[in-house]
Length: 297
Image (cartoon, rainbow, N blue to C red; front, top):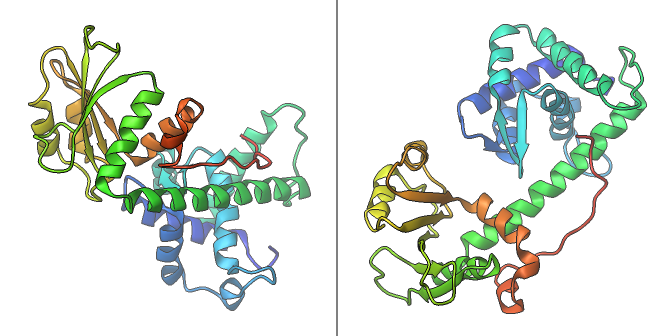
């Protein structure tokens, strides 16, 4: 990327971090890049397309973020980018864009030097490092696309099918589901499950399932916890996730045991137990692993 100076990379990265810092829970990469483009006044080169397809700008920024990930400043999970505490400190410490990027590169090299069989790097971008970045970006974009498709599929699912998916997961995890609420008013409990087939051994698991897009707030969580008895365990599944105060409420509970499951955690659990699911259950969310050359970690 001879047309892109380190100062320019630093400008792009610092502005990206400023955008991400406005959303502490992070942003989907595609949304962050879309928000960054109008703020940085793209050059003709950056706004141009590669012959293989795709605008140069997105690829340039993605390549530069690899350094910040290895520096510990940026986290990427299923296409969502979020700034770490170290990243916040770096933004405050390095106001000069070039210094900001140089420090990220320095920390990348320190990480690289700690790897087995590593070799000293020059100040120029070495071929093997460029190749490693390309592998990382290819993997990252594939993960983003896969997650976007899975997320959209679940968000469009009928609420009762979504409820049945959660019940199927519990069965695959070895729990005995004794009741799933039929369509209609359910009184706040959607699924009942036990650790044994007869339901004689506590705890009883009470599950509430919400396929809504909005996050569940603390009042919604408290309404569910009010349904839990002393020997009950609560499981709250929400496609829209939970607010920070709801997470804090669940964490600090002393009398009511409740676990919060957002869409990301639900899919992770589905993948983990996929081999134990019955075939009809798998058809609710059919997944197929595809092998990629893994980036360095």
